[in-house]
Amino acid sequence: MKVTPIILLQSLSGKLYGRDGFYFRKSKNGTIYACKCPNRDNHIKTPAEAANQKRFAEQFAGKNKPSV
Image 1 (cartoon, rainbow, N blue to C red):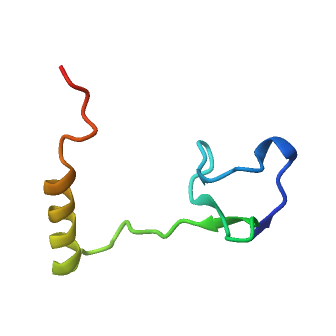
Image 2: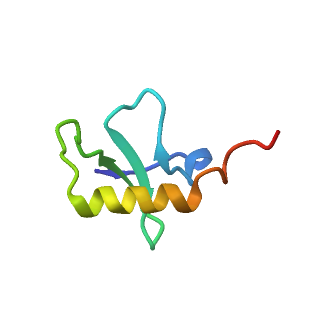
């Protein structure tokens, strides 16, 4: 779905609160699109997906935690 934003929302991107199931993205030419989020409720991870998530967690764990 193509979106025509008002002037204040020209840099709209990401998922908005209250709009479950949709997110906004900007194409290379500057057009903004509203996209439907995939439904992954019943998704079963493949071994490759599980390994990738584990590798990502090991690499980035603790980098976004506030220091004490």
